[in-house]
Image: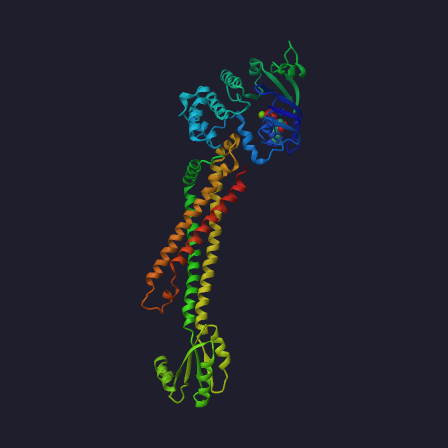
Length: 243
Length: 294
Ligand SMILES: Nc1ncnc2c1ncn2[C@@H]1O[C@H](COP(=O)(O)OP(=O)(O)O)[C@@H](O)[C@H]1O
Ligand SMILES: [Mg+2]
């Protein structure tokens, strides 16, 4: 579903944000991208959305090579890749319903689709009762749920989340993780970039650790730090789990 | 992908309303500049129409010297008659010209004149105005001919005045059109800035570039269109006013001679609206290119 092949990305100021990264993520997987601030997590996500282009290497998303993809195809790529951020990015003057509906309207979905899909996804994230509230009338956790609903309403193949719990307290964060887990169980591939150790430890999912732009660990049922009991799982074991 | 017209219309209306002061400024500038363009076009066509009148009336007068002999006069008369490009000639005797001069000249000037010193004349209408010059070339300086005259200069002055007026209108209009374009560009820039959050969400969820651009594009287009429709109405009104002032019982007046047909008016309004739409599109296209990176 997602494949990085020896990807290197340097920004214009010379910072090498991602160095020789190769990574395979299968359909339906739930993957944590962890590492300290500045280790290149956001850069990886931006490249998956083709907001940034790598300097070397190739990237496949949903079976398509996206580096040489013509510009006009990029919107169609993004329809297959939902994304949520630390700062929610909701439109402040639209209600919950309108925020989610907006994502369908602007890709030309007919009214009938909007009217059936939006209530359904609001139900999924547990915000049916707040559909007519403005974002400013919601808690942080609720706002992030709206953002997840907006990212998922078009049923993308992949859901990316960049520090989705960065602004939330631990209890609320767990709620968001449970929601992402539920979405993952519908068959959607989920990639979460985070440095929230407690959450990663709690979820026990595949962990890919970046440090200064290189992958230093890829563990099937990992925790945030290196697990003293099991130690780092070798890559072959990750592959074995998949097959 | 089905572009929902409903969505575009709603977004455009919202943008226009949010930016209403700038919108009004842009629309008014478009209207004033295009009204000037329209007036200049009316003037140009009016002058072209009137020119037909003026030239149709172009008369060449061959004045005979008072001292000329009857045979000289006769020679000129018969030669004029044979010219293929001269429509008709009439002979005015010395007495006839003396009487005419009495009505045209001031008493002081007339006092010096007697029938004997008044030149007789042939008044000729050429088939086409430009042949007046040919008649002039042929008879000026011929024995017995005093001079050949045609109202070249009068027509010239009239046309020159209209040409100057036309250029003044057009250059003022050009400056105003430029500022109208810049105003539209600026309103679109402000609209893009006001909606940068929406635009970034649209990009994120995979709206196509055209879907993102279209509301801004149509906003500029509508500003140009409304402005030009106002201008077209002004041009229409101006035309109606001039027409009502032109007295059909007196075909000699300039206004009557300059009057336009319905088709000419329609064509002018069409050009005005076309330019308005063009200005709106170019203004918003430039704003989108510079300020909306999708
Ligand atoms: N737009 C940018 N221009 C220059 N350098 C950047 C830019 N974005 C990120 N970087 C640098 O790239 C490195 C990786 O950043 P990032 O991918 O944001 O890491 P993370 O998300 O893991 O904190 C950092 O050193 C950061 O300073
Ligand atoms: Mg980051």
